[in-house]
Length: 369
Image (tube, rainbow, N blue to C red; front, side):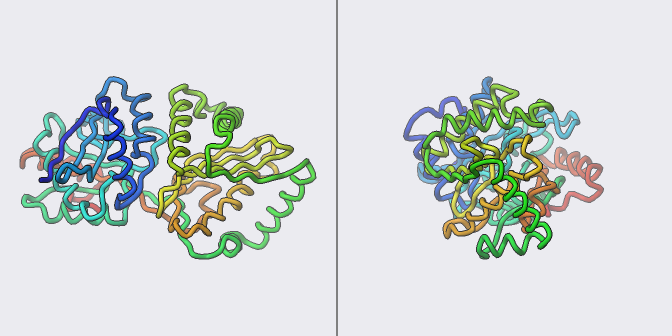
């Protein structure tokens, strides 16, 4: 028996439920650390204390085979348009559901059916921060195309962000990515930095010294331009706590890789990766702006290329904005991240949605890209 039901995330406290969630993440068709239990539950604790978000769970013969957080929202890119959406937050960089391999099409079929039957005031379904390629995308596209009733849909956002997808060695990739002149400049900056003191690199895959590391990261980021702009993690106690809980949770499960560039033992550049084989996610990075003339952040990214030597990792998502001024020149590959709007409910509702999305995109709602 296969069924999809909604559950209040605040009831997800049983250790067996968490274990089932963790098992789902390990067998997911596509990894998403932002929807794993150790990351999503702390995020909901901080940003959805009223419990407006539901966990939509697909179970097959009692086994959890799909999960996505869903919410009714009334704001759509600045406009008042009630709709269902997958729930994300400012530091969530992927909205892909966790779905066991082989259940991708079944999951989308049941999710769309539930959205149809529980449309309420919602005009449509919006799926944000979705991978624009891969098994989840292909299954969703096929389900929309082959719906019994014509289901209008459109891709309303499509961006490319830097990714690392290569079988080259770290040295070869580095040399192919940057010009001879730029590589020479980085070597010069490293030598100048070494003249300032004892320059060392620390790479950790365990929870060793994690609390101190987190404190250093939050302080370093807050002292820079993000702190002045009010966007540093430490500017909001909720984002600071979530950062702490997420890194602690990832470390407990062996999914955290930390890099630090130290000068006389003091961090001047720091980076946290989430490891979710066959992928990885470059979650957060920061550097000491007092040393910006030495490009410590770029030097640390050069060291991060060693992840190419991990045979379990096929790709790394930068989690960076499109056209990022630094990483776009360093990582040559791109990952498509899309936002899809999909008609739900009856024929009249779908016609209203079709007209609205055509005004938004300038194209008829005849499927996702």
